[in-house]
Amino acid sequence: MPLHITKIAFGCDSVDDLREALEVESQGGEVRLTTRYCPKRVEEMEGGSLYWIHASAIVGRSPILGFMENGQGRYWLRIEPRLIPVVPRMKRAHQGWRYLAEADAPPDLTDGMSTGGAMPPMMAQELEKLGLI
Image (cartoon, rainbow, N blue to C red; front, side, top):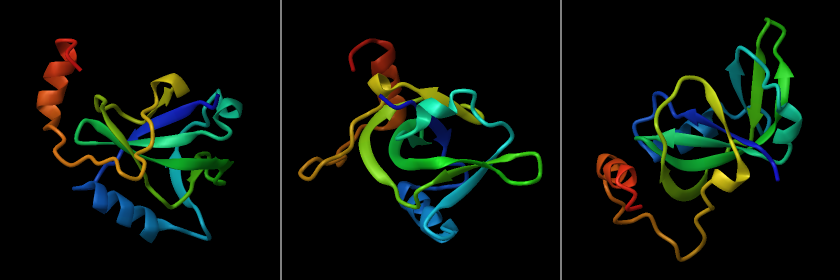
């Protein structure tokens, strides 16, 4: 089972903004995000994904292509320039990226599934704290 990571969709006002940003930032079939450090568990991430957090919820994922030095003492996280929608799951904001185990990753939305009628993030957080969802 691959290891995944989570990251905040900083600067995106909506999931559609995130999807557009990935398409615009695409360079030769990949998007490169700069990070200070290469993850220590990078080998476990083969076949993993970057799960995007927006409005306190994991909303989608982009498959990880790999990591590479950028020549300036930093690393590029290379991902596919697409956003695969997932069943939304509440997730607190954090700085940088965090590991996400396969067992904790939300499943992809399949045909026929919908996020329509999803509850507001604050309400979902409160219900999650109470153990109701």
